[in-house]
Image (tube, rainbow, N blue to C red):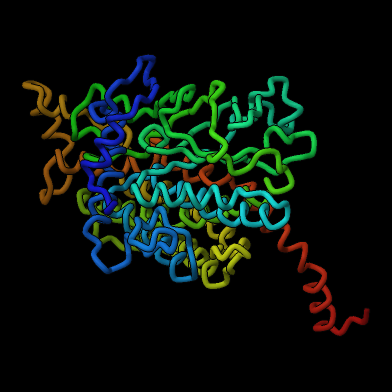
Length: 485
């Protein structure tokens, strides 16, 4: 099958029998729902671009598994160039949609991390998970499916490991093993694009102990599999999509990522779609591979968000009549510096990355964790800088309906006007975009902080790397100072 079109994708999601709830009501048509259509538009744009990639090899790649062209989001990274192109793609696409396309992006990390881990399991244990995974990869590549990754368990009491929880379902686990498959129960929280994907690939979210074999499970199911329930996220800007107009959205056409909390209510998974089933000693390496890949992609897409933020802040400064002020240039330069430092560290992780035994190419863990941590800092620092530049109207602007009102519209257009070079409407449109990008009522900074792991997770990896080198650093310093051992 050739690469799918945007309409093919939309049609395939519309044909699903997904059990989805939003704002307390069941959603029967995702494409017509104001909170899901924008996110589907972003995924659809990726399909459009990929369909017309030709032989350029940016949106697409050659797959050795089907000996044909596949979407890059479904590709297994064979070498450094593959990983670099995947990394560059995220930043580029954010410039186009300003959103998060978890129904494609996260699937890449899930497939590649499983590729490395199932190979190691088969080599060490004599299992056949790698063969099963390759069969699944061929299936999604041949049909150009949107694949979402589901890692984050709800976790319950975070002081307790999975087997210590008062409720065993707070981490997804196996409740029954059958000859033809397994039955699983639990929930995955804040899963990007799960309801607007064709398939969901599930991974454990932490290293596991011997008492936790039932939690060591990985598999793939269609997003509308019996027993899979989706409950939509409800960030404040989504309410405007229900009651407001296009001008009020900030990002006029595209949406953030259409996340849902995914409940697995005794879901049956066929044996051929199970990629880990109790092999708890491999859960840690699977989580590590996935986290590193997602931190790489996050470092890229958040650089794209910051590019948009710099542009929006510069326009807002022009609208305020101070675009040429020296302090504005200095603030934008600082934001750009913070952003590119994160992007550069992520790029370094590719150049110092290595192939696993399976043949999949992975980023260097140290540099990618530094990149992700720096990227989070750049997001929050950038929000402060841009709020300073744009002013209080970012969170106090009126709605489109107010501007059109027979009486107050005239007054608002008069008193909220900035520079003579722009209209009041366009000034407010840009402020709404800044509101969207900085997270005034949005999910962008929170998702940037916790997506692919919280800052503390990156600090742990960096600290572990330092502890391996600290004695050598101390010895070198003593020698330099002329101190004898």
